Length: 241
Image (cartoon, rainbow, N blue to C red; front, side, top):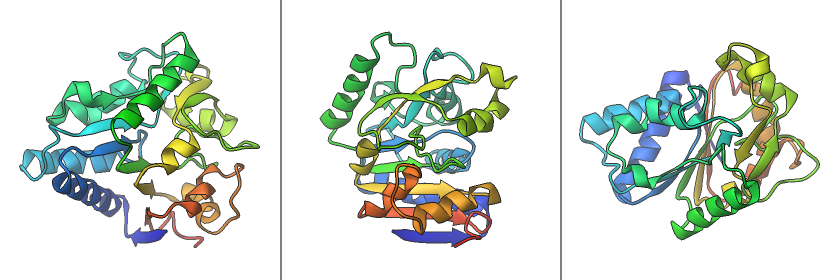
């Protein structure tokens, strides 16, 4: 596990973008695992900039997103499909057929999840998986639990997660209570993992991830077992280390 502590959010975003851009330059048909939320926005902006400056070509890249709210349509402005299209994909030359995001409205949940796993496997697996982290240590929407969920599955969202995500909605009542998420095993099968965290609110979760015991009560702690993890933190998120 490699820790990179940088000054601020901007530097964190640039470091992450540099790693992703290098991966795509070295392997143009890379398979990227992508995250949503506030944390990776700066990384996406930096990657868009690099694309516009002809530094990186996304035409052969495939992507798989970590998660999607269950019950939200693709055109809902709070869906992660909408987020990805409007914060990244529409600004680069990625083939829309190579974009994969869990379907939040598919009726057969089990089939939906199995299809997602199959697509990842058929693509050769994920080369680089980008992760954020919740204040409760969740990665993707794998919430604190009594066991680790292995593969893509339906999640009942933790109360802390619902409260944290309420800032994106008009009220907490509008926040979906469930989501489709990659499982822990799926994430760990990625060849490389980048975890991004900024702000003092994430400091305890980062401490538990890096220094704590491995436990499903802190889902991110499982990353201690992965062979190739880079954690990029600003100074505030690293304050307890």
